[in-house]
Length: 239
Image (tube, rainbow, N blue to C red):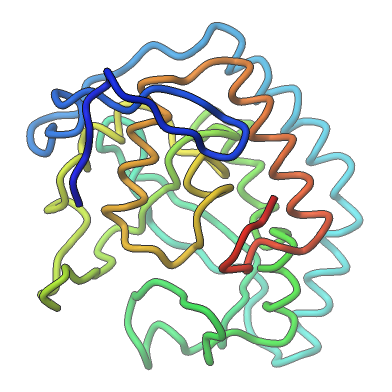
């Protein structure tokens, strides 16, 4: 995938921001360097996650009951993921796949019409409600509402030739860990979930170079709109 310099621009829906510079795009090895966040980013995360945890409390019970009634398996799915500065964080979600999915198929990315997904899971994934437990990570400061998605440790992806790769081997991996991972972002809102990780990295680096309080507010608002309409699993336009 060819990437342009910051002298050009791209329009992502309503967001018109410059492309990442070559120096950022080509950062693939070495320790992640911390990048300063917008000053109001953490206060916004804390306030919204606190409100979200309180308002969603009744939903947690209803979702847990629905998952248990369907197959009797565990309510939560816990996974180790990459956090800021190449740290590792534990991410908990409401389980949306069969209890033995990892054992049968391995740690692979979900795809459209995935046979591993349960009936309750399809609803949760479409509305984004499977992500509700991650409000705790945001509240504690390990994650943010907006940022690159937290990548699963040891997840296997493939290049254009079908060769198996780990995320750490992809260009831009360390640079995207210079900020806290998020629930949503440019790639999450504007691109399908199952596009190749290298394409997602492109949009993640775009966000890192152009992050601002107002961009975060816009992406959060769009994410709520997608959730209300149940469009998170849509492979076409979500907004």
